Length: 144
Image (cartoon, rainbow, N blue to C red; front, side):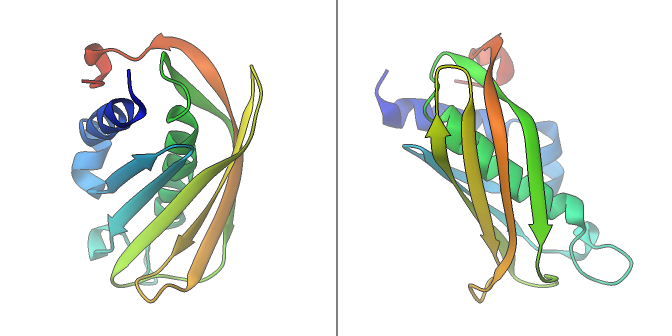
């Protein structure tokens, strides 16, 4: 299967996730890269009026995860570990995370991601390790 077809199927799989119906992110996948854009809205805020840390994590992990899965065409990958550095609050606009694969071997992948606000300011960074699962990419999980 050509890369572009695989990437679009990953995007459709992501769109089919029940959690994403609430958070409303937009995923774009390329060769070893991915971008997640999350519209900032009050339902995602903590009590102090900015997006909750879990939203940063989701954007960073998802962009790194799909950067890795863009290179793995037969199975779903798994996040083995992920570290997040929160740099500044975001309370309006959008959160845009870009992930890229920085290392790959037969068993382990390392990817990093950076998130920016609508003005392009760096607001968070993350990096993680990922591995192949045994779960095939099929229409049963939205890969269609």
